[in-house]
Amino acid sequence: MIRIFIGYDENETVAYHVLAHSIITNATQPVTISPLRKESFRSFYVRERSDIESTDFSFTRFLVPYLCYYEGWAMFMDCDMVNTADIAELWAMRNDTFSVMCVKHDYQPTDEVKFLGNVQTRYEKKNWSSVMLFNNARCRALTPDVVAKESGLYLHQFKWLEGDHLIGGLPVTWNYLVGEMTMPGVPKLIHYTLGGPYFESYRDCEHADVWRRAREQMLTAAKG
Image 1 (cartoon, rainbow, N blue to C red):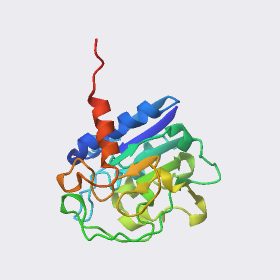
Image 2: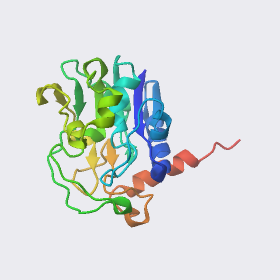
Image 3: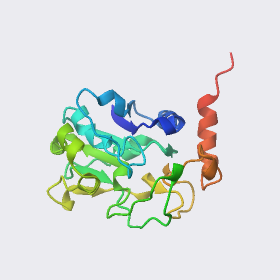
Image 4: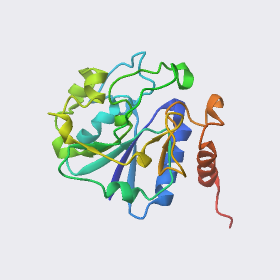
């Protein structure tokens, strides 16, 4: 079973459902998909949202190992994505040598702001944490208390690990950043990091047609 957690924010509800549907329809193995809805964690996790957090799941993503009882592997994704390939391909890249695996982007954002007027922050390892494979047993440092109290840079720059040698790399096609890079063909996991086609300002962004097709497929009911 492939365990997947997707960030959830009320401002991007449609994005969550389109991504989940695109994963299910392309998968050749069973998947479980869980939304990381911050309000659902109030019994064990409370952290007020700051001005630099563009989504409600900026930090809740790091609760995934805890939610899995620090057992097995699990996957996290931002919701502003669409999947075009078999997620089992990504799942098969798990490597027990590492504590966490991600696409190691090497770039600086070109825009000052992104969707809904959110400030575009710049820091080392930017967007590495937007898709992660967690080797949960090796991520015990990520307790609810740590996720609630530590800084954004501590969490997103993987400072909770003993070193960067514990971060495994994934192919860039599994976290392609629209508007920030180029790639021939259609990437396997398209990330609308600046803003998805569901926002008016980004309705004509690169690969917007891929997202809209996925949405239409999700909304199409079988004819009886």
